[in-house]
Length: 388
Image (cartoon, rainbow, N blue to C red; front, side, top):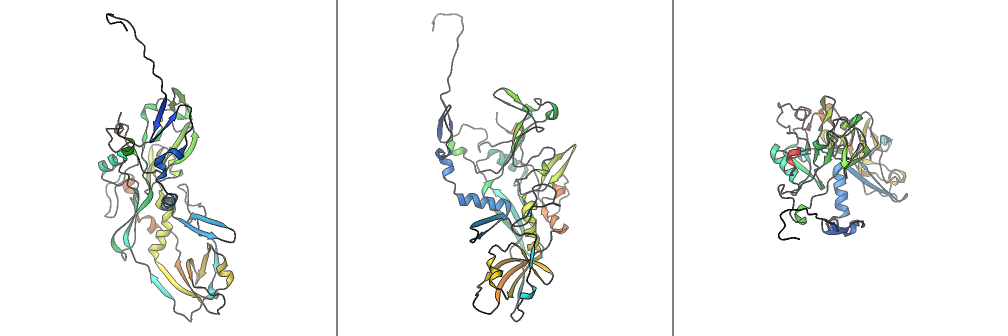
């Protein structure tokens, strides 16, 4: 240093010795061990499993003979927008004929199910630390990613909230700064990224404990082309590691959609409605609730009938398909019938699809919403919403 110098040049060299990620430090070149991340230790495996159940309407059963646990979405489902082809759920598209087992000497009891509130609302857990989520929800006066099914008027008035027990909603934004990087099929495409910003959106330097978010659900499509280019370490890359809860880009309706609500997806120069979690996994359950026929029946069962612990096949009775819910007190050494609880399976109808809200009109921008409808907004913010 020269105290009396009137001019000259100076160089400053800075070495990064380590960087910090929420409660633990990693030296450069070191190994990231998630066991050291204390934030993860507060989560329980059963809470995570409960969140998965709430996303996909999972059913469980155990087969002690084969020593296996079966975990499947309760009914057949589709991972795309094409419902003409579905994957098997817990209840398989097969049946067993139980007509010759019926014992009509005992009273069969039918209950027309009408318990519970008419409006069944599915929503994510509220993440009070997610500033972008709060910003968009407050701006639109809406609960992002939420969806409801309206049962018939024989159900009591009101709404039943079914909040996910583990996952919060996942926000996205389009990186306009990268829009000019692409070539070929990536030309003029702004890649879409998951985006999480602290609750105090103007102060990203708050302490780590204030910047702890709820777990988010997302789908990793892989390192692909056609969804935009990006920069990493100064290098322009034409393949993109695509992670999202909803792919709002062209064709995204046929990707997994991790939103309870149906979503507005780009399709060429217009938009289409991509089916959300409610329609992909829960609609068959609600169709059965809408029909509402629960029976307590008496059947003359043998060991073979109850030995199949899983009971994934429908039971055929009186020309209809029934789901077996439980068998009450089967006694193999007594020659008497056994009480069984069953519910009638019915196909998903146009009436069921029209009972899901927000409706297609709301999603695609029609302001003429009916009374039960819900406002819609994408799980997406503007680039200008993100603090610089």
